[in-house]
Image (cartoon, rainbow, N blue to C red; front, side, top):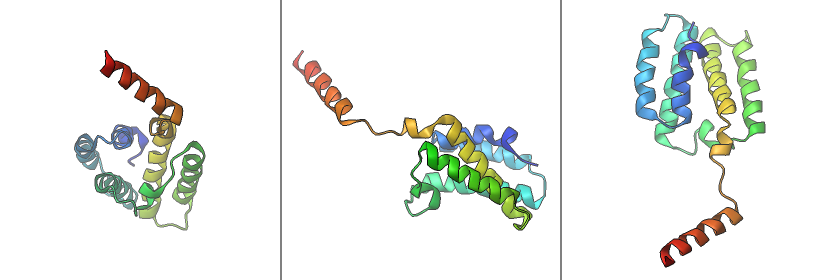
Length: 136
């Protein structure tokens, strides 16, 4: 079964938007694929993450999310619940498991801190630094 031990490198590449490297890593993951419905669902979710990042389409679910600590934890919990729900088919559980692994990486990397917009005060400081440099 494919899981976070195999996909963590790939998921970190997606989080840091290193798409060409992630695509190469995805090929390695495909080579480790067991021919189960669970693994197929997992790999399809990984493929979807690549396509989502490449497209930048703001209408896609993951691109619409407001990624902050609270929402990432909530969505992660939802994906874990879906992955464990035996009412879902094996393929779907694998798919949700991959998305849960992705959200766990987002949570661990605290991606919302990296994407934080500078405050007004920080912008003012940057402008002042730029003016001092140009005056020198």
